[in-house]
Amino acid sequence: MGARKFMHWIMKTLVTKRARNAIPYLSQHRSAPIRARWLAASFCLWAFSALPPPLAAAELPPIDDILELQSARQSDSLVVATEDGGRGEAILENLNPNINSWFLLTLRWRDGDAPVVYHLENPLPETQRVALDPAHADGLVIIEGEQSTPCTLWRRRQGNRLELAHNSQPIFASLCDGKLLVRRKPAGHRTRLEQVTDLLRDRIWGGEKLVGLVKQSLYRDAFLERGEASDESECLAPSPEAPLRAKLGANFVDQGVIPRNLDIKVAASNQALTLGCWYPVQGQSGVQLSVIEPRAIAPEILASDRIKVRPLDSVENSALTYLVAFDLSQLELGFELGTDHPRLNWSDRTLETVRDPRLPGPDGFDDPGPLITTGSISADQAARTVATFTGGFKRSHSAFHYGDLANRNHGSHYGFLSHGVLFSRLQPGLSTLYARDDGRVEMKTWHEQDDDNLLPRLRHARQNGVPLLEYNPQSQASHPGEFVARWGRGNWSGSAEGKLRTLRAGACIQETPQRRFLIYGWFSSATPSAMTRVFQAYGCRDAMMLDMNALEHTYLALYSVDQEQIVVQHLIDDMIEVDQRVGDTFTPRFIGYADNRDFFYLMRKEPED
Image: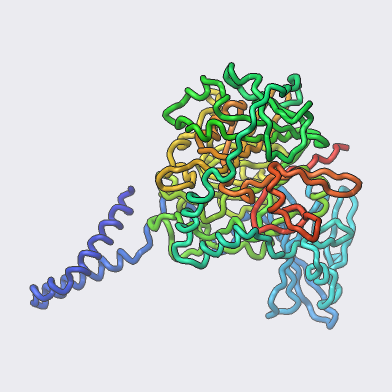
């Protein structure tokens, strides 16, 4: 605790005692000089205690709105002529010219009029630019190479193309022959479980504790899967295009299991799958699946770093884990915020000593406006999408209550960034999955210097707590994170008694001599220690947790097209219940409708010219 914070605590303590003893003190010392000195001292103590706690040296000052976070944004303006001879103004802001994806267009038709703001998306950020041009004062100009194409949008104030598109039904309305999209705010879908939990957390005092009680009593091991042992499985021959096999103990090298709830179809001779092996997913180039039980992991891995990683109990030792590997030479990663989550307000876990009551959120705001979060992707992106999976924790769980991370940067709320636009600051010490401007996908523990060296080059990023595995550049080896076995400092959720075993999802980066893979892990019943051991067994470089406790929180689906129809394969067959049903037709989450939760998506890369 710093000197100022210590003095702040002392003063508040003294003020409390002063208030408690004020009446008897004054009654004993009735002389005017004593009373005057006592009142003067009391006022000084009260004034000092009323001040907010001093910010830590590493903390950045708060800001008023989300646009102030976008340090690279550029704007241009143009005089707009109205149909009645008036003069207005159009302002175009490129929120991150390095990424060139999101824009804000502001129209003000007359002085004193309220501005109208539109959130625009450039679907081809690598090849086209969007600009204002005085020679075309009634719209925007799309620039591709040497070619400039005007796009008329606002010749008249009412009923112009921009307004009509913004008020239309699609979440992403097309402008300029599809060269530009205007985003509109949909209502995000919630499952019944999410409706109830959000109601409890948002409207009922003590609702978070009630949600936690329900989780511990009803959801612990609710999704536990154990495979039926089989001697008929066959492991495919190693391939340069395949991920690394898991390192197993000698007694489990050829052990097979028959998974009962797996919905993904793989290239296997029968239903039995060999533990630790990889199987190509049918109809999906660059996607492979593996299954493992933690007890099968090589003994030398299970015995390592015992200070950092807890021994596994008998339940999680035999609980099935499914892993899906995505070949990053064929696929690119995206990230979208849900219509409601993750929010930008304070987490309830934030300590009062680092929470500034004058601010609605740790970054200074709690509303992403005027930006529009859609909980879905556009039709153009959906046509190339191979997979989606739920992102990370909601904001209510995304801050630390214990340890150093709880006492700095307003509680170290998990940060996130989409399309080059920063919604919440990326915090040092947190595991971060991100995609750079060149398309490269990586994971690392964020450091303060990354704000200057790496942040300007990011297209997407999501933090989700401390690392399960962390790569050390000096030793060129990966090690379990410092807080894997520490419930409070790791912010692993679960219960205060350390009952951490539940359904969990996570992700890691694996590198082979020929390929790099993003691996998604679905753990039917596991602690952070079991997750760490599994990712170690598969030779992962860095690993992080995503979300937990329910199928909607650990949702993963694969997509393919058959005769112009989208075919959906869920990782677990019951995940279909999360999708929306219209009659006998299921509409897939994230690509068929807007959802309240954030998510990652993997798209097939465009062929190079």
